[in-house]
Length: 76
Image (cartoon, rainbow, N blue to C red):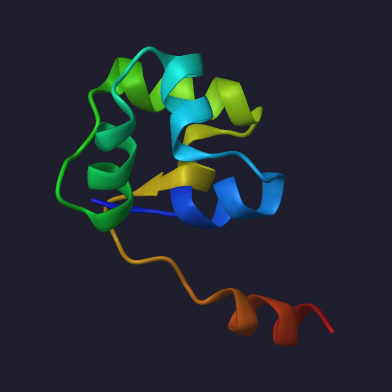
């Protein structure tokens, strides 16, 4: 599973610890998710997306995300 968790955390200036506390997991779980070492349960994925107030498909995908630079150049 692919995710943009680290990107969104950095953009919103949220630490792993703060996110973990908000969604009820150990901070190490957030690190495992970001590295792709762990796939979240549906419940956890929904809790994380609710925390960031974005659709779950903005954060998680079964296929690699297109690089943001490609998206930006298309929009320009």
